[in-house]
Image (cartoon, rainbow, N blue to C red; front, side):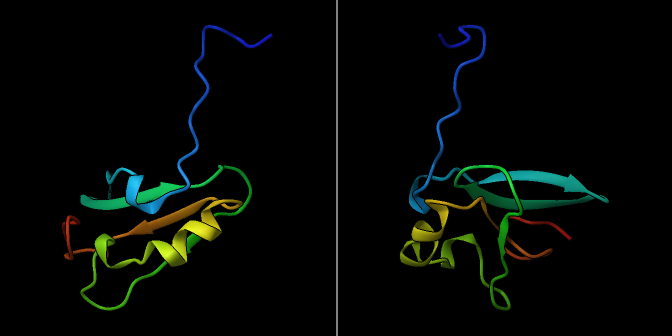
Length: 83
């Protein structure tokens, strides 16, 4: 039997369905997306200069996110990140 007090978290494995979120650290707000099952060491994707979260191709991200925790983010001062 499952615990009815805590709903099970749905694992998003499609980059196009992963919500963009933000986190603030050191006064800088970072925009990021994370998908795939959590646990273990995540795969963190660094994008090229001046690219944003929307520049990632789901054909690259989605197969990796099926089995690994994936994090993409906007660099400071680019896209939805401040700094």
